Every structure is written in C-alpha cells, then in structure tokens.
Amino acid sequence: MIIKAGIDFGDIERSVRDTTITVQLPQPRILSSEIDLDSFEPDAENNDALKGLQKDAEETAVANGLLDDARSNAELILTGFFAGAYDLTAYQIRFTNQ
Image (tube, rainbow, N blue to C red; front, side, top):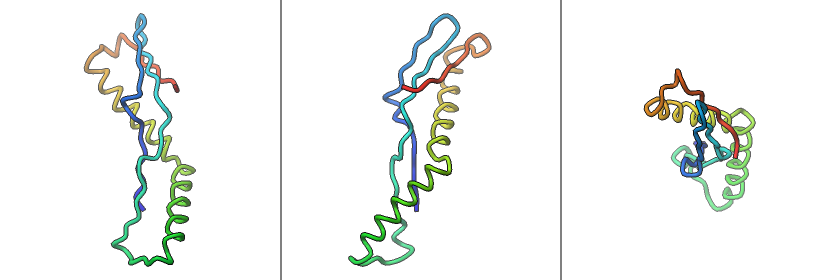
C-alpha cells in the first residue's frame, strides 16, 4: 500500500508584520492511496475487501503520524523558501492553522 499525504500549497496564506512571517497552513490530507496490484491478482470478489484494506491502511497511517509528518515537511520546505527571501536571523516564522 502506498499512501501519500500533503498540504495544498495553493491554499497557504502568509503575512509579514514587523519581523514576524505568519504562515497559515491548511490541514494536511491524504492525497492518494494505492494498492500495489502487481503483488497479487484480485478478482471481482476481492474488490470490497480491497476497499476495506485501503481504508484501514489510511486510518493506520494517519494514527501513526502521516499527517503530522506531512505538515512538518511543508514547514521545512517553506522555511527554506523564506530563507531565500528573508534574513531568518532577523525574522521569525510562525506557522498557524487555517
């Protein structure tokens, strides 16, 4: 099972006031989940079982921190982006939820 999560960067809002960059992040979400069908050959009877497996795998991934990891990755990428535009020794980045 391959499960991908992330944040839609098009929905990010930012503002700069004094020396604080405030970045409002949307909630991370599951972007895709795929079953590796090359590992077995499902038939019509297994379709419902596969859907249940996919849902269970997504719930397990979220419970194990997948969405938290997606947010952390987004913050890391954005910090690098802002470091190219601002002197981060003079500015503080504050991440908030939308």
